[in-house]
Amino acid sequence: RPRSLDAAIPRDLETIVLKAIAKDPADRYRTAADFAADLRQFLEDKPIRARRVKMVEHLWRWCRRNPMVASLSAAVAVLVLLVGGGLWVNGLLRVERDRAVSSEFRARDAEGRAIDAERDMKVRRHLAQAASLRRSSQPGRRAECLEVIRKAIELGPPEELRRELRD
Image (cartoon, rainbow, N blue to C red; front, side, top):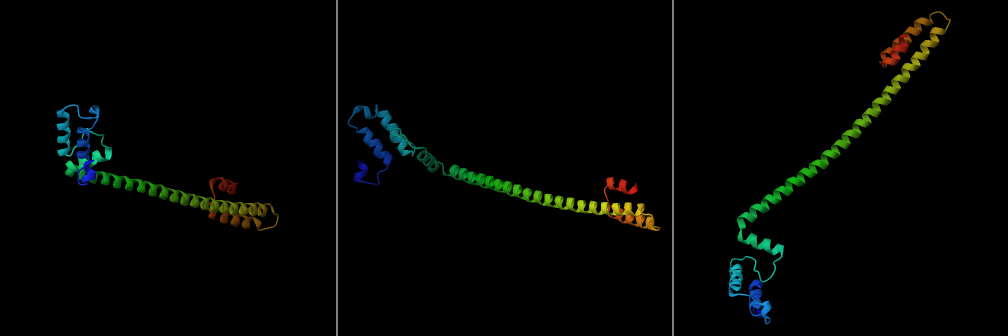
């Protein structure tokens, strides 16, 4: 192997030489033109036909032949990854914010329902007190009954309880 004598010899050149001097004629180049084509490919830093080049090596050689296009392509790829990552993080943050806002609204809604229920309970208490005062036969109780109804109306009852207070 030529590389065992001189490690500076490129692997592709070694491959071309070993194929050209192979013992079995079936393993050699079929024509001098094929041999010359592989040598030209080697000199142009392109993949040779003597062996299959892995995709990574093929890409690396292309980048060495086209440095401007390769660097612009890499910059665009990095930019796309950064923008994509930013959009993904933004989406995650938006979902989390919506969850927080939603849970806050649910808490406020539950608090509002509790306040409404407490108000309705107070109005019903006033309503029951007014009914008992109205039924009482003692003098002056009807005036007290109207005062209790006025306090109930000041609480701002819903329409259903307003009808009961009116009646």
